[in-house]
Image (cartoon, rainbow, N blue to C red; front, side, top):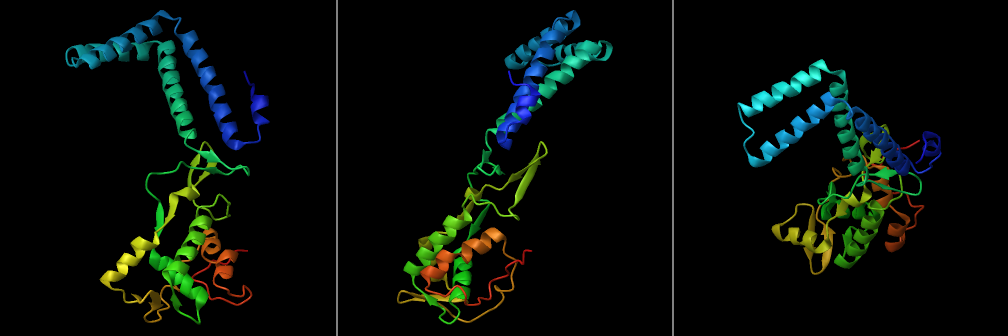
Amino acid sequence: MLGKEDIIKERDELSFLKDILAYEETKLKCSLDELSKYSEVQNYISLLKNIRSYQKQGVYKDPIKATYEDNLDFLVDFYKEVKLYKETAKTLTDYQNYSKKLETFTSTEEGIIYNGKSEKPCKTYSIYDLLNHLMTLKQSNFQTTPEELSKYRDIVARNITSKKHYQDDEITETFLGTKIYQNPENYAVEDIETGLAKFQTGSSTYKFENGIISLVSFNDSFIKSKSLSQREEHAFYSEEAYVLLKIDKDTKIKKIGVKKHE
């Protein structure tokens, strides 16, 4: 069994957390085994088993319920071993739940821990998001084709969901003192076919006619919209995007709300 000194040497933080929990769970189980030797604790355990049996049968009701709960309260209040057993059992349950949650996390080679992949995206970038940034890149030619937009969409999707870590990546929670980041796979980009169908209902900004998507009227409101994260900046304005559009990367582009990072 690993000792604490061995566990602390573990470089992978996710593995470190798993090992620490396994170590603590083992200690708690040993404590429960020792406490179970006391007759009062054995009575407490027996009462819990009887309660579960009555609950399963659907007959755990007064006066049986009141009698059993009074007996449980008496044992917990008057015997320190029973109280310690109850507290230890709860702690073990908490740790086991932590272990289950850890299994949903993933870790990169750099040691970044991401939460699990969700059934629904935490954020979806629409066809309008794509077009706004694409037109910002093009600037002098506010037109594109579904084919070009599709290729741009693939670039954005690949970069927005990459496991490359950015300083301002979203932290979903702090778990056992460790930062857990939003899994990049929880971001999504709307597919082109679904997005283009929206133009059938009309758009005040873009039109889709004769296989060409064009800007109807320039509106800089989207340029002044919320700031982009570093991940979004690299997704929408990547080197690949410049190559696709045959734009000189040295050309100054007024990007949509890009944050200035020191």
